[in-house]
Amino acid sequence: MKNVDQIKQQLAEVVRHYNSKGWSPATSTNYSFRLPDNPTVVYVSKSGIDKHYFAPTDFMEVDLNGKALPAFEGIRPSAETLIHCTLYQLFPEMHCIVHSHSVYSVLHSAVESDAVRLEGYEVLKGYEGIKTHEVSVDLPIFDNTQDMTAFAAELTAQKERLTIPAFIMRKHGTYAWGRDLFEAKRHLETTEYLLEVEWKLRK
Ligand SMILES: [Zn+2]
Picture 1 (tube, helix red, strand yellow):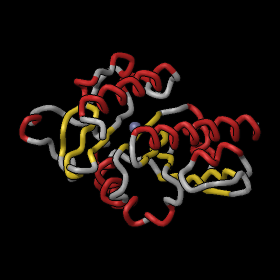
Picture 2 (tube, protein in one colour; picture 1 turned 60 degrees about the horizontal axis):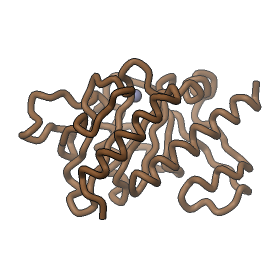
Picture 3 (cartoon, helix red, strand yellow; picture 1 turned 135 degrees about the vertical axis):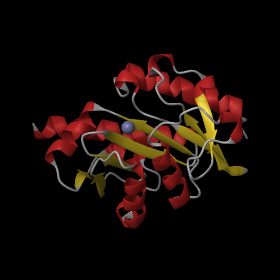
Picture 4 (tube, helix red, strand yellow; picture 1 turned 30 degrees about the vertical axis):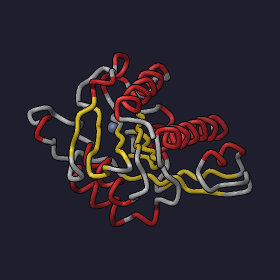
């Protein structure tokens, strides 16, 4: 199994790569992981870091309620840390969460109500468990808010809408998760690719 430092390094690389794709403008977005043998400690990106320069040292440790562990008291976790913690509680087998503020997630959610329907695409097989393009899934859209406690409650109450490992926050961005970094990355890239295709197809 990979150690913490290796994962920090790999996830930091992914964060910088996503920044180069335009998915995290102006210090936005946040990322986290946890280890299967210590699942109550969440390593989450610190707030206010320019993602172009994101480094392995830019993670801090919080508990499953989003509270900074003693060694990190006084350091501000991302405002959306509670979303990460809630997803880990809803999906105990998941160990990595990635987020984007992509243009296509914002465009779709500006014009669509509850979900983006994704149907018949080969790349749908990027979602764990999907084996054929002959499938139709709904990528759920949740309304954006600055009240993360309310948003966490909403996610929990509507867990049955999370049939694929991703969702959109309206006019905000995409969240995706997986059992490890490799899988979370695949799920976010699957989602972003399909959002771009769908948008270009419909216009
Ligand atoms: Zn965000």
